[in-house]
Amino acid sequence: MEDQLRTILDDAGGLLKPAASLSPRDDLFAAGLTSFKTVGVMLAIEEEFDVVFPDQLLTRATFSSIAALTAAIESIRGDADAA
Image (cartoon, rainbow, N blue to C red; front, side, top):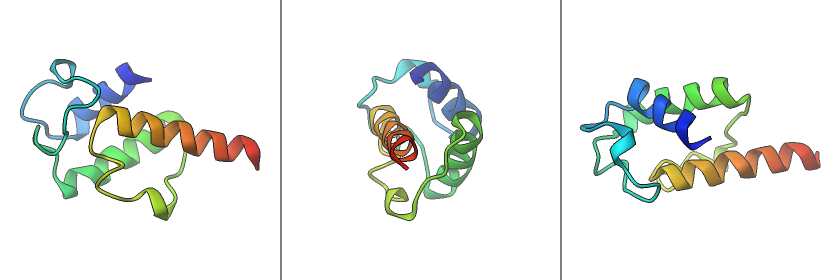
């Protein structure tokens, strides 16, 4: 999942450096992600992982790092499995 997220961030995130150079906990906003670019990242994640971000996860914290995005996707998938 992390490799797929790094590809999405490289393609849609507008980062100042390659996502491969970031640790899972590095701040994506410090690396160049903007609120505008988070929309493209979110849409790409939804398509790639077949998930839909619920309103409560549409926060800066959700998109703050690769680790946070991974946790959000796993949470969404877990909620879908429980439904």
